[in-house]
Amino acid sequence: MKEVKHLPCEIVSEILSRLPIESIMQFKSVCKSWFSLIEDPSFVKLQLKRAKSRPHRLILWSNQVRKNWVLLLDRDKEGKDMWKGRDISLEYTFKYEKQDHCLNFIIVGSCNGLLCMVSTFWYGCCSIFYGIFICNPITQECTMLPVGGGRFFNGGDIAEGQIGFGVDSSGKYKVIQIFKKQSFSSDVDDDCGLKGEIITLGESSWREIEIPYQSFYSRDDSWRKRRAIEGMVFMNGVLYCIIQKPTTHEVSDQPIILVFNLDDDKFSTIEFRPSIELPPYYELGLIEIKGSLALHHRCRDDLVFSVICMK
Image 1 (cartoon, helix red, strand yellow):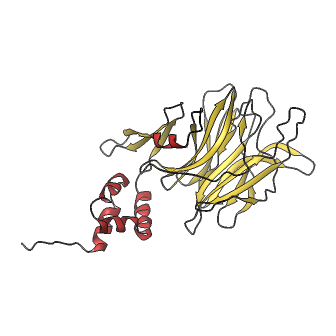
Image 2 (image 1 turned 90 degrees about the vertical axis):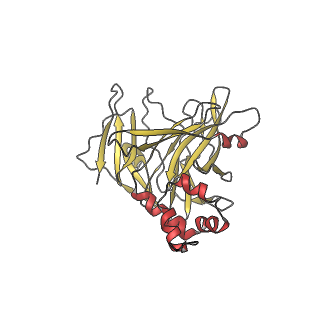
Image 3 (image 1 turned 135 degrees about the vertical axis):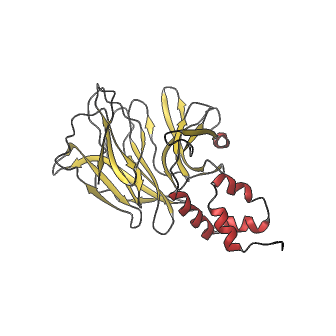
């Protein structure tokens, strides 16, 4: 039998692109030619296309101090309803820690295997915003974004913010942050509307974007406590979050969906159908289910979540 010493590059690419990303990262060390192949943008695009055709992974995470990790869950091929999980440490993010403060990380978005995380640290009884990170939990590569104008601060629900992460049709990854231009003076209760900023990965500064709508969805009920920072839902080049419906004279108590297109950096809105009743909810948010946008909500005194899929 004649020995085959070299396989054509196209065949090697086809074989490697079908492997799990963990194996691909190991094969980068085989030889220089494989390293160059795996780093090539065309191979990355092919691998990503094949990865999307496989069952999606679930991500669970813990933001306990000094115990930052994510749990990756894969569906077991041998059991239809069985899952296998493994811990992925985020200890490599500790190099960004602020002196005398341990950082906690909150996942606010994910796209093509990358995680968008917000870091905070405790100062007294307040959770202080520190920075936004883009991380690859498999390769353990992590980038801290430049400092923008957002200063999310949670000391008794003083401020709110939305952060979105996604990719446009040209393959550029973008992060958007929307926050209240709120005065933190104890003598002034000034809402000041909303401010928006956007950055493309690789850029050195944020760009301000105009927001035509001026309030997040937030009821005045004293029992309703809201996280200071929430993630927007990314789907098909578009980011979604919930805000209050603007009216002629003031902001109403009815929620609508704020839409941000990553291709043209423009906002629009989607109103809920009249058939969808929205009584006072303790939690109201958006999720993506199999390519469709869905509304999830839970009433104040109810431990059961309801999900409405919008197609």
